[in-house]
Length: 413
Image 1 (cartoon, one colour):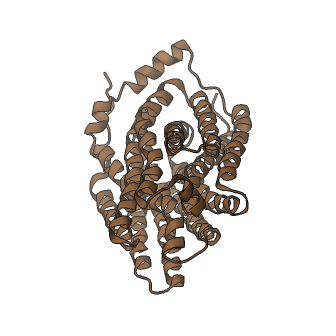
Image 2 (tube, helix red, strand yellow; image 1 turned 135 degrees about the horizontal axis):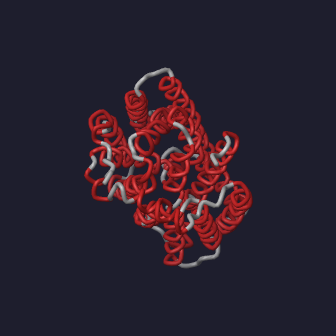
Image 3 (cartoon, rainbow, N blue to C red; image 1 turned 90 degrees about the horizontal axis):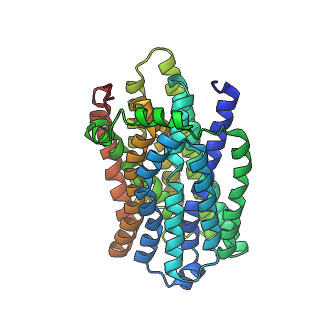
């Protein structure tokens, strides 16, 4: 029996909240890395900070394909439940560690467990939301990934300033566990029976991993995810430190401006997804419409370079906030295009998992490369120039590779 519209949007809201919590837990470290007490406690250099930020993403990327495979065959609810509890526990335990090795281990666990979020969520959206609502649904869901840093950065900064970095990790980790109660009550148990498992395996096998990797659309989606993610993850991992160290803000105020940046991209992402859906509902080509929004978002985001050369604090803050906000034009439509519209339903989980490898790579490279570029140049200007280049690559890639004729082919034998 199909889920009612009210239940569909209710579960979507819950998936969005789960996404938000995952981003709060993954980005809380960036606020700690801007706290001198935390840096001194572990004797961290700039290069160390870059590698520590990237540890999450290496584990996150490594587990994307396995998680996509799992949710394609065994459903969404139970894998998500187990992984959610695991990453919240690891976040809380982070507040008790005293050695750098243990800190890195907790970040690896959080990264591995959070790898379930995107494949599971898009698997559920793809099976329950029609095409003319997918852009809006993707925009709503993407809000979780933007509101997470928007809320998490100032919250983490406030907890560190008024309590300690240890208390911040424990509080955010334990608070997240409250989400499990409505999740267990609202979401249907979709663990397949033996008969359903046979059908699910047959459907998932109708498109092989090899055929997915042969598709130019998949490679185009991976390039887009990398270019988009590189900028977003830079903002999550290095923006607080940039605002404190190069622009002279306090830790508390740096969290506030990070909040404005991610609120901006979240709102624009949702509106852009809704606007594209309305155009598609009126008969416009779905691929053309979504590509136009994606290209506009990449070009708009490239204004970040103006912030690097801004002569005043006010101008730098303006361009920092505006550039990430304009990137929101791409957010929902890139997600809908690359993960839903151009992907056969039976393998959404696996295809999304493949794409998320590039997203994870973007996070790891952005965090570590930005730290190295900061080390060798002594300024955040060079990391921003690299962001500018990747955003222009994303715009060009969208125009060339994301074409329906190059989508993964279904084996109908």
